Image (cartoon, rainbow, N blue to C red):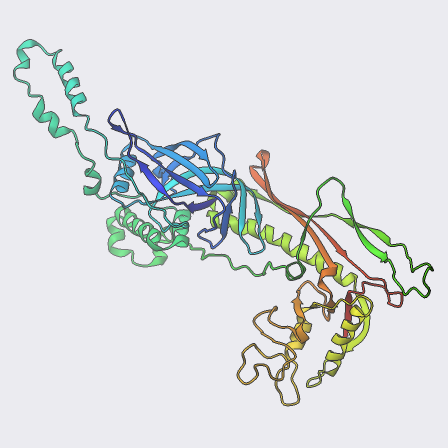
Length: 543
């Protein structure tokens, strides 16, 4: 479940027949605005992602279901976001929350939602398309969206003493006439009835012992939230200990049941879900319509023009021939089934780790499909780069030779150098006869613009441009892969469908699936003397 703090919160001070409405209203979620949740995930809500009907979300304090203070009474969809109104219940806890809002202690609102349909962008941002809206909370934390402050607060309700006096009068009417003269109504009744909510500020509230899950969630949030929960833990421990425990128990080995086992987050992600190849060549929108495949035409025989030798004679003519290339859509998907207990017992941020990893595996697989296809379409250039320290001759001959092969019949030129990580490392390690790097770091002292075939940077795969080519380093490529490529000839098609989920009642679980459609195509040019493969993808042998 995601918990995001919204903005533009107001407490309605309007009155109906002189009585405050005890409602809070504002923007629950703004659409199209990026926010960051506690685990660092960036989230954007699309228009229509939250429901305006169905079961009403509850009003909590600090996302604690045991501190329920009201319920959402109205949900209004606008072009900018989801508006809401919530009503405070007539309970002591709700009165306290209202008073804290009046004092400015509570000044923000936060929503708790469970995304059921969303996409993950290349930069890791979650785009929520549909979600279950579970609750909205009054909070004191720093808002994810700027401007999350209370601008108007309803006053406390009128005192109810007149009603009590009426009740006493009714009771008094039933007393025998001779006893009425000895009864006093005003003095004892005024002393017994509280007339101001200030009682909540005068009494220190006692908190129950927090559970292990609540303690870990507070530790993950940190700041003032963890300070309060930690203080509640120690207060409850001191209150419940016996006299013997107070005197003798001073070792942690004596109180294992009181010590939670923290799980330090966030979870370390041991794989970077980048798509080097897909990012370098870009994706095109998948064509609409039915069918598992679509046609991508290419020219196999172009038209022709020539010199007219004699006036009045026929000029050169040649019919253009177009090939109808079939491009097949591939379905890329992954799923995971999560027990309801896991969803109930773990922190929402932990759930996001699982779902983000599922989306990341989709990204990883589509990039693997892209690089495998490009390698399968390569044409042997006939050039070899002999990796010898201090000798860049074979490297320059190979790159320029591939550039000649690409441009000889097309007048087009290479744009990218696609390599595996081990080839990238060999490029960066090349030195000249004076032990200077052929690909120095950008801005290296004394090397700027000198003795360099391009720029290099050991901290980034994209920080190198051998002979002006944009380098693409892909861990999905086989060892010793080195391709010189004319980028516009590579066409990658994609239609991400995002996350889907369905309940599995008999297993008390929910199945999540992430899927999309992916297709690849490479253009070629007429070159009768070339060996098999695309003329625009030239392979260099690394020896």
